[in-house]
Length: 363
Image 1 (cartoon, rainbow, N blue to C red):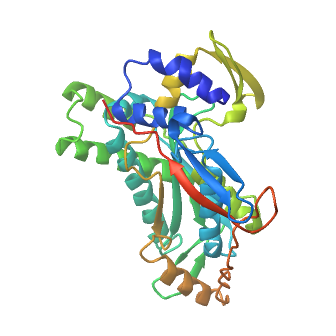
Image 2 (tube, rainbow, N blue to C red; image 1 turned 120 degrees about the vertical axis):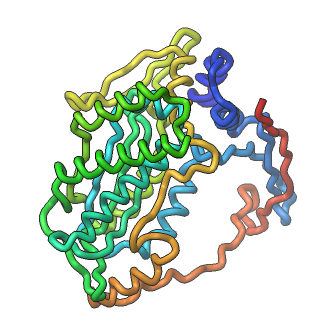
C-alpha cells in the first residue's frame, strides 16, 4: 500500500457528498495493485517457475498507472511532429464559474473546448493573420498546485496554417496571435455559449437572476490567456506532450508523509517559485482530488483542425509536400520475444491465468 492509498483508506470513509463516478474512480485507486483487485500468474514453460503479480487498476486518474499509457501515446504521435516552431497557449476559465462547474461539469467542460477551438479557428482563418487551417492538440487540466479547482485548457499548436492553395503559411512572432485579442474573443464566445446552453435547458439548475448577473460580471472582467513559443526542441517535443496529456492532479512523489491526523503535501508556490509543504487532513485531500475526476466517458485530450483524427494523415501529407519534406519513415514492427524467465533465463515466460476479485457497482 503506497502513501496515496493510505490517504484513501483514512479519508474516503469520511466523504458523504461524492457522486457515483467519483466513488468508482477512488475505489479503483484504492484497490490498485492490492489483493482486492486480484492477481495475474506467469509461469516458465521450461523450469516450471511461477510468479504472481498483483493487478493494477489502469484507471486514467491513477497516479501509478500512467507510465505505460504515456509511452504508448508518445510512440503513436512521434510521426506527427512537424519541423516547425510550436506554440503553447493556455485558456483559463474564471474561478467565479467554479460553482457552475460543480453542478454542470460535462456541459461547462464541453463548452470550454468548443469556445477555445472556435477562437483559434477564427484567428487562424483571418486573412490578416495565417489565412488557413490550424492544427491543435488540446488538453484539459482542472487543478492547481494546491488541488483546488483551476480549470484551464492547454493548447499545443504547430506554428502555421495550411492554406486553401495548399501552401504552408508560417507564423511570425513569438506569441502566434495577440493575447488581448484572443482573450476578448474567447470571453465573448464562452459567454454566448453559456447563454445558448441555458436556452436549451442544459443549465436549468441555475436561477435566472444569478445567471444574468454572472454573465454581466464575466463580460466586465479580463480573462486570462497565456501564449508563448515552445522552448523545447523537436526531439523532446513528444515526451513533453506525453507528460501533459497523461498528467493527473496528484503525483505520488508530492506526498511527503501520512498520519492519522494529516498528510503533508509538497507544492510549488508560483508567486515566489518556491517549493513549500501544505498540511491537510486525509478527508480534505480526498475531497480536493475528487474535484478533478472527469465525468464518465469524457475525453480530456482532443485534436482539432489538420490534427483532427479524421483528416490528420491526409493533411500532414499535404503539409509535408508544401514544406518539401520527405514522408516519415514508419517504424518497423519487430517481433517481440517472450521475456526470459527470471529463474532459469530461458525465453519461456508466459501468462498462465488471472484471478479477478474486484467488481465495483455504483450505489
